[in-house]
Amino acid sequence: MSTVQPEPRVKSFLSQDRIPAFVGGNWQTTSAGEVEVVDPSTGAVVTRVCAADASDVNSAVESAHQAFASWSALSPSERAVYLHRLADLIESHAEVLAQLESIDVGKPINNARGFDIPFGAECLRYFADLSVQATYDTPLAIKQMEARVHRAPYGVSGFIFPWNFPFTLFCWGAAPALAAGNTVVVKASEVTPLSTLYIGHLAQEAGIPDGVTNILTGYGQACGQPLAEHPLVKRMSFTGSTTVGKLIGRICGERLVPCKLELGGKGAALVLQDADIPAAAASLANAITLNTGQVCCTATRWFLHESVYDDFIDQAREVLSHTKIACGMDEQSQMGPLVSKPQLDRVQDYYQKGIATGATAVIEMERPEVTAGGYFVSPHLLTGSDDNVCYREEVFGPTAYVVKFSDETQAVSRVNQLAYGLANSVWSQDHARASQLAEKVIAGNSWINAHNVFAYGLPYGGVNLSGVGGGVNSPETFNDYLRNQTIARPLA
Ligand code: NAD
Image 1: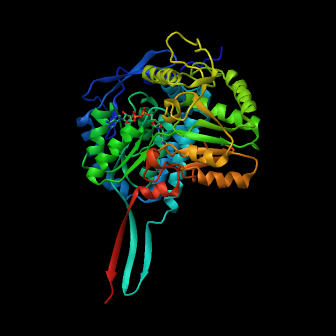
Image 2: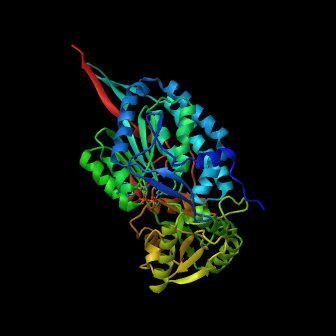
Image 3: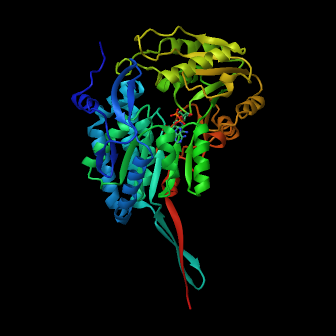
């Protein structure tokens, strides 16, 4: 039996009566009742979290506003020390965070240990170091003038996050904002708030001044919307569905507050006849089971050249049939459950609607019997026409829609047919040809012979319905959290 037992710090964190919100350096109960946190591997309630509403948002934003003056007055190196200290603490609490992430999201513990937590800590270090080396004043050579562009933080930055990668996305969002001298108010997803709230303890232990980082959990309308609407929030960032993203975009547009929107996707993989088929089939099969397919940028439409189609499907079937589906805390698990009952219903509903409207299953496996109450599904591959709901919409489960093609140009236009534009990949051993096609498939990210590629310094963001506002993980992201101010003195 290789199931990990929650370690004492995890048990103690979960045993709190209601996990409070972190506001102004204090752990506070909130006004809007509670949210039950469910382990999707079992369906059992593991703890309760205080739910925040507009009045709690107001306290958090006021605290962040008050803390801004002193936090922004620190030098970049001083702020970087705090962020490195937080990264150190994340590393020393990595097992706690990985267990919380696994219990909350249902993700395989070894994925949380190997990716989510260390990659989040690395993000804090990346932006801390970038901020020390950044240019905050650029002199301008203009005749008869002493002039410069000065870059300063905005003030309070609001963040709303989804449930699929809570820890990593917190780091991707908050690290550049904090490093640039902003203070932050974060609304964690009501579905998976645990690791984000735990960061509040680490921020305290790192000595980050009170009010610099504030963490709330609550429902979208009750807590997320008042955050986006708050007049003291000077910068917003939203990661989540395109539907809610449009709403946040409208609110910020009305307030003329800059906003990053990181939204949904319907990524494609274009597999040419000269691709390394075993490697491509294994990578794409693993891409749809990663986080049980609940990955915004994953490859959910596979365009396979007709000459390699049968071989590719056979190899993908082999990989998928050996993918170990098990509870998040099982060390053998390669794919956990879906995150919640509504998500299970949504994915099953998509399969049923897809099949009812003409799609057929290329690979369909029995629903796994892992636990009685867990939200487990099996991977599926479907095929059919391009107007099928499973081809066009984001299912957010372990599934892909398979398309056979013979003409490359037509395949590219079919990849580009949908209004999403987050991430695509091209698979070929001719790297020059792959590189040309990578430019033609429209998205914020085009990967070659790989899918789901992340690194700090490599910008990641979407276009069209997948997002707007500059993306994450790059020097540009850091600059997005600084406003430009031109300072000029005409010379007599
Ligand atoms: P969601 O849009 O339902 O919720 C995201 C967040 O918005 C949650 O915290 C939720 O409480 C909040 N929210 C909901 N309604 C709101 C409202 N009216 N006002 C303010 N806030 C509101 O998305 P989800 O189901 O949590 O996450 C899945 C989605 O996130 C998928 O579409 C996925 O593609 C997307 N996603 C995108 C990226 C990216 O980087 N592009 C990363 C992860 C997830």
